Length: 93
Image 1 (cartoon, rainbow, N blue to C red):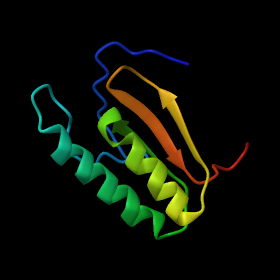
Image 2 (cartoon, helix red, strand yellow):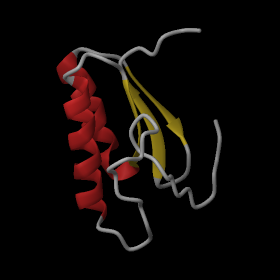
Image 3 (cartoon, rainbow, N blue to C red):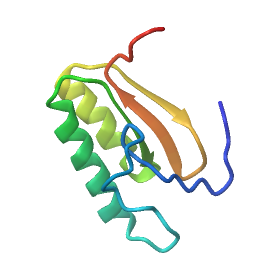
């Protein structure tokens, strides 16, 4: 388990960072969470595993998304506000 104080990720979904807004203090958490979860759901349609940094506000919804798709779910604690979540099995190296 890792802890990163005041974690401020510069990417959210699979490290592309192309069109996800950066999270900043004071940002509307429900909007940001909905945006991130919507992108995750879209990417799950490809059948590939999805990894994303998610605000703890949306963790239960990520679990429900995984259950709806019948896929495994895992989460890594980053801070009191963020977790790195994975839906689907990542390839083993």
